[in-house]
Length: 367
Ligand SMILES: *Cc1c(COP(=O)(O)O)cnc(C)c1O
Image (cartoon, rainbow, N blue to C red):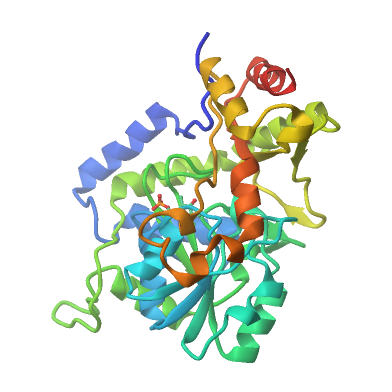
């Protein structure tokens, strides 16, 4: 039997892609803000219901660039329950990450614990919409306003997520997206920064092009994060099918929930009222005593049978050697994050899972 992988890339139709490649070849314009680049930025802004989007070559550079653009220094409050790139972006800017525990109801940074971690050096908060579940953006903004802090959301998981019909990307000062092959929407490698005004968009566009504001003028020490025409064309085609992909993911989530609800020792998230979810992941939480097997035992048992779950997010970022010695990385400071990291397994979740695949995954977990 073939392996069932945790994810599978959404790929455009090859013939359609080929036709666009022909256009690019004919134009001989292959990068530097070409026509597909412009079209993809406009199409994404429309799809995501935001005024401004700036494309990037991956989902890590927009984090680094947002911190640069907002001139963030000192300490930034963030979550240990994420992909390492979130904290790495702080480190690359010479900023000290301060880990705050998560809310076990969502897996997101717990607003109730943020204030206690603020010091005179704190300049910003960097939360993550983990698994695409919206953070409590109102509570976070209230704290930010009270202390004069910026908020940069790592929204890598939150493509297309809306709360009461409005994009989650409206929250905070800026939000970042990842369009990596493993994500709900991909441009192979890619990402974006979402901002709220034209001036910031202009500044970001300078920063991602070495700081060039004209042929001979450099206004800031920028970086190179320009997206080429091939990937922009690929991205335009994928945008057309992303709604179908999200609908297919939703079906898988519904099937998992129906089959696994009530199984002793298993729990998972349900949809949140008023939220358009993107079903980017299906995290399942194992209570070993009640389930009769630890998370790792289940993980390896599944792996042996060719059902490849992933332990997202384990280990916590605060456990990696680079960050382990930070005072805020102490285990006692992060009990909920540790509990989640030690009990989570993400089940296979993508647009191309068949009914049989889903049944095979369910049978493995229910056994
Ligand atoms: C994927 C991801 C990133 C990094 O995105 P890349 O496109 O791989 O650079 C950052 N943060 C989170 C939470 C992610 O899941």
